[in-house]
Image 1 (cartoon, rainbow, N blue to C red):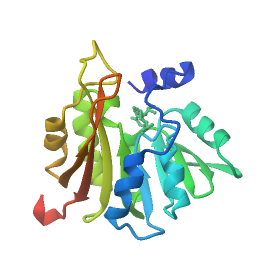
Image 2: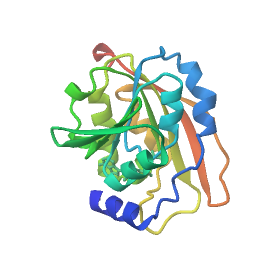
Image 3: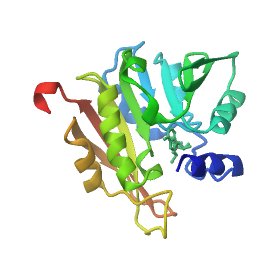
Length: 212
Ligand SMILES: C[S@@+](CC[C@H](N)C(=O)[O-])C[C@H]1O[C@@H](n2cnc3c(N)ncnc32)[C@H](O)[C@@H]1O
């Protein structure tokens, strides 16, 4: 699975990437009331420009991405000095207040995320097979302290793909995956675009242990 993604980035098959900040991030982020300076986890981040938008608004970013190609493109398309270092299994690039950890999200440990005060996820689930989606929702919950809030943009395809990725993920599945550990609220549903993709915008809050 990881190799498939590394291959896709190498071949430039990245139709999911957007050339501008996601309007729904700009629209809904302020309502989460994340204090400025709060560090934001961005799992399966690609080279999303949404990370720059967050950083420019005073939120340091910790993005995780399996493809070094994606990270190299992100920093080369950005501005500012780049520093690099290693931490455990991760190769880390830092540019301004964006840190990009190259490696497998499932290897990220709670010790790496203690400072995280919010998260932002766009299109992670469609990258993962069904069993991995369950693991993803569980692992994300393990990495976050109770009360941590996030914005999630999931993508549903009205035209069923032959085989993924991107995988077909319905909003009912999103609810099933996240409800055990998160309070979940559907904020908006965008109509399908010309490729048959529609987006659901969710706000999430990590539940406390007594609520699990
Ligand atoms: C559908 S793309 C979404 C990227 C980004 N969030 C965006 O909105 O442009 C999914 C991304 O997850 C990365 N990925 C897939 N499996 C991963 C894993 N196990 N750990 C870290 N990144 C992964 C892929 O390389 C790809 O860039």
